[in-house]
Image (cartoon, rainbow, N blue to C red):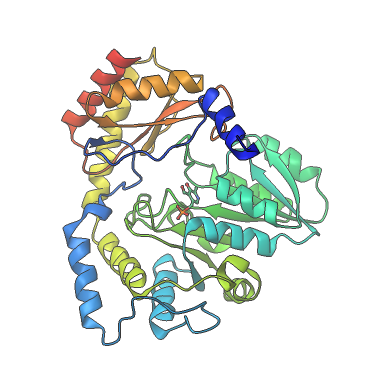
Length: 372
Ligand SMILES: Cc1ncc(COP(=O)(O)O)c(C=O)c1O
């Protein structure tokens, strides 16, 4: 065995080996397709019409945006994304991962300190690692600790949070965080991956919904979750877009999105605008789930009021066994192991969707009761 194979073997022995699951047709309590857009026939038709209506559709964009990959089409979509979110400018990236690593590595000069919530997503952590900036962390959603960390930090400061946390499903106290940032002359960046499409009457996300969209340095919205497609955008002022076009390496050295991807993003925004009923349906499923959850108070639920609900089952082997048992009832549910989450906080992560039925929620709770 070479050193890499030995490493894999070590992972396997500690129940940490990652393998690709096979696709199933079970009840979906695991995908990020919160509004069912990725399975929406309406969205598929909109995309087909959009592609047919355009004269020169290319299968590939042929190069980086700074070389042959730019087009009026991509610029017009960025304009409409910016318009929807009521910001000066939007810059598309091929994924949320690339948006976060591009944004943070570009902004993270050595004079800067990033102060991040301890639960920020791996893509932000990797962005920090690629940057030259100093780093501090504050306890999850703990605004007193944020203040403590800010007060200990001299120079330029940028605070990093998510609006809805991907693993705990809880919400950042954004208004308080913003006030504290202002007090300490710090900038704020918000990752809205799990809020876009879900939060607000028009699915505009948390910052826009709270009226603070233009008070933060940048927000990152991603299209692979509630929007049912793929890609991401960094929203901010015009200078920020200009800066990223010059310094964000994941933007500069990567092929621009294809016309089909652009059409998908455009149409997902169209469908999103007319989806308030779908959002209401999601909310009523969340309400139903939370009231059922409270009947099972002996289980260790995290306190979440969003579409992401997690139940702590400490231990990697234990959480995997629980997931396998529940999957036998025809349910797709994800065990989240450490180190993806802190040691001891391994969990079953339940993703709720607009298309889940009350009956499916009942099946899930019966399976949880029997399987844990
Ligand atoms: C909070 C958060 N940010 C960014 C990303 C990355 O986005 P993408 O999947 O588009 O690369 C994810 C994906 O899971 C996420 O949960």
